[in-house]
Length: 252
Image (cartoon, rainbow, N blue to C red; front, side, top):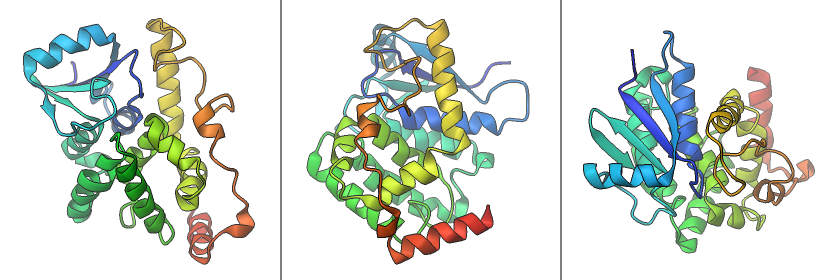
């Protein structure tokens, strides 16, 4: 039995589509059967291009840094764009809990607005989006309301994947986002699963140093984007942040 959904990642994708990959990995982790809910493959860009042209893939973010990095195929329909793919997968598998019904409107608004801006090449839009998320995270644990959703994966993926976002993050103006990224998202099991999958894909799909798929764990210090994020002084935590993380510690 094969999955109806196939996520194809360009082996030479730059930036790397972390958000769609993380979304697929998270959903597959919820599967109870022997087969994954979403098939994930790595292909050369040269093989993805004909698929796009033949299917007239749905483009929802023409300003995205590099659209031809990831494709989602479902029953002959092909979709491009990180945010669009994350949205489709989250809605298709409600049992994964990434798109709760009660948060549907808020998620739609956030993905089409803030998260879409974080995949763009416009520095102004990226600054606006990061400022909005930073303000939200000053008073809550999640980018959207009170629950872990696809918005968390989109934000994490944008920080890792869009070089313009990681450069802006290195400015030090978004302390709440930095803290959320380092202390909430990176330790989550889904990120570990994503890194392991990349390593496994690299083993069967040879790549060179400049490819998106690498054998090295991206969390190592040699990664310039992650090492540029400041190690924050916890004494400077805001009152809202202290309450938020204290509550999280109690719940865990």
